[in-house]
Length: 304
Image 1 (cartoon, rainbow, N blue to C red):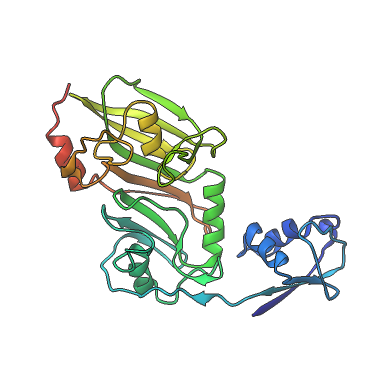
Image 2: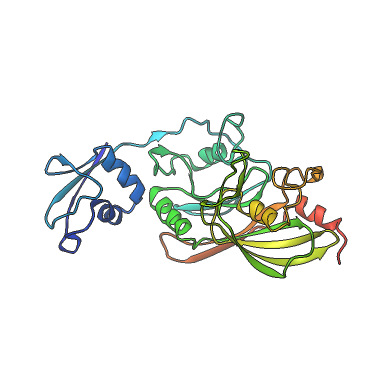
């Protein structure tokens, strides 16, 4: 357990406790601090406070932060394709078929298993558990680049970019059909399907979801499309493309029943990721070339 004592400065007089503390303690998110307050870990003058407590200049705030526990997952020596790495973060390529997080039925061979081995002690404890800081995800059968935080400082700042939709994420995909505009925007809320809870769908009252798309090349029956995420909802591109009548090729969940089995899942590649480095403030961008499964399928298509 770590104890931090912060004296309220003049400029924070009248501020909410959770908002002030989130700015004063840069390795904790506002939601993490709200959880600490709710758990009774934040006191003023020996009294537990509420997150909405209005602060007064000169008050001493005591914050007790529990030690992060180790993640109950085995570290595995799995080769990683790392595009960039420093003391704060790394950009890693996840191949199609690899699961990001261990889950029932997938306890081993995941990206997290590999990162635990590679990162050793350089882990984020942002949620009370020491783990590689996966700040965003891509589906098992989607290939591409992932951004991973190696400490709490990087995790908080990268997560903030996700929240503010400032992370630059560009995907390549091949979809069914050719009768689509050269470019356009899909703005349709996404939530759990009311018919099948394992699927996502366009639902009234769902979370805001926005995708910009542009046509790269048209083929007989298919189109190569580039998609830029403005938000990052679960299965967003797959759901949005299906919604406008152009499901992703190979998608067994949102596409036609007659699935293209040679693709072994959706033809979707998270090719480009761009972000502001949390420590240097420098904009960085990385691009992974189209993988073999994608280029092989595209090579067989007939160009219009």
